[in-house]
Length: 312
Image (cartoon, rainbow, N blue to C red; front, side, top):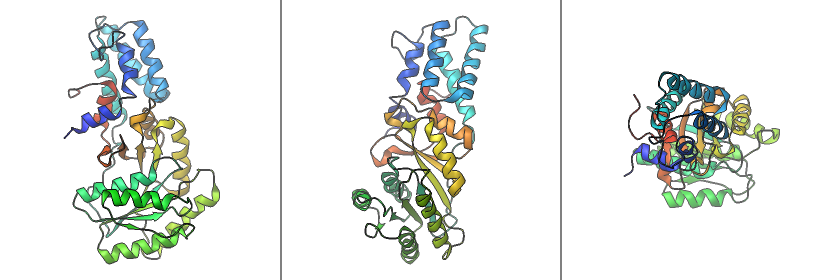
């Protein structure tokens, strides 16, 4: 089984070549080539194009430049280690974890815009909890989109995780209410609510989220216990605005960043965290269920810069 670092490295294969190129025109991954002004310019361009943002880009460049001033023999691999170290420091405290479940069931609402991968993520997340020995239940609260029920049912059947669903057009809050009752009756440990995809500027759909919260509150005043935004990492800095609006409207407690395997803009993870300080619980690194991985700042930083060994 591949290590977590290897999964990150494989998943970020569309991002990392940008950085490899910045340090090695010969194509060897941050190889023995000495750093020069040209390669520093390439690194700056790569960082900006990957949406790491001004602050993170400048911090990485400053650290590399300072090292270069002290050592004109600085090599690409040395610079890569510096960049990874800075990135890991910037992301300190970003790893979201549920160390123990404090409710029965623990209710996690997944929100986000259409196309973010929210529905598939709900099923994959349920499988993840199942593999931990927990009993999950998925609630198909996306009753707005015609094909949503079929999609979530297909994924739940494929991964062998239980599902509560209703017909297209049903009241999403009522589905959530019924699912919570079912979860209690079955002794489920985790209830995952797959809500309808919505644009963050559509007030009617945002109000529906508030209704789900109110209706669940009739059974559990603290529900949902977690509100995670599922955001498409390939949209780059635009994801920050999405996160900001959802946070203001629904009170986010964390993030899941998907589609990092198919983007050259994987730096958005850093931008979102710096902007909102919301913990990142999982990242999507591929299509398979096991490609939804707990976020690791260390593995992410190393994978982006192609560092195989531990960063000192």
